[in-house]
Length: 118
Image (cartoon, rainbow, N blue to C red; front, side, top):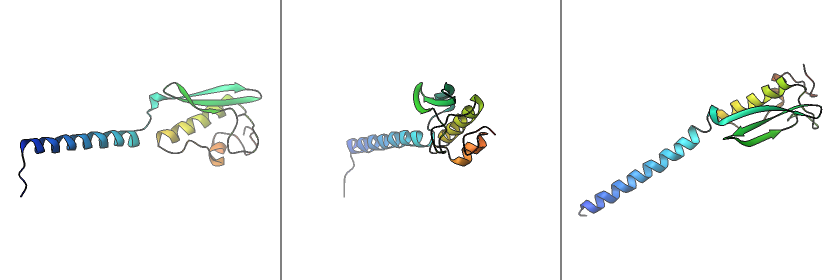
């Protein structure tokens, strides 16, 4: 039979507190993720059209000067389509999803599969 002293009880409480703190931190980072305030979208002009960038804590995280998911490196035809695409990516990031755009996402922005405005 093991005799429990005040010192062993204290060590057990310290380890339990440390474990709770570590698990709380991990849970926060995994489930909360970036907030709306930390993500900023900004369309910008490029040669022949528009692109967008997404910043996290004022540092550029995504720089997208052309339309992803379509062949070639064609810019968005106008500011609005670039902004819609950026907002779609931002929403995916806030949901904890991969920040990539599919051809379906691109079509929803008002751009056809060739990169032209609908």
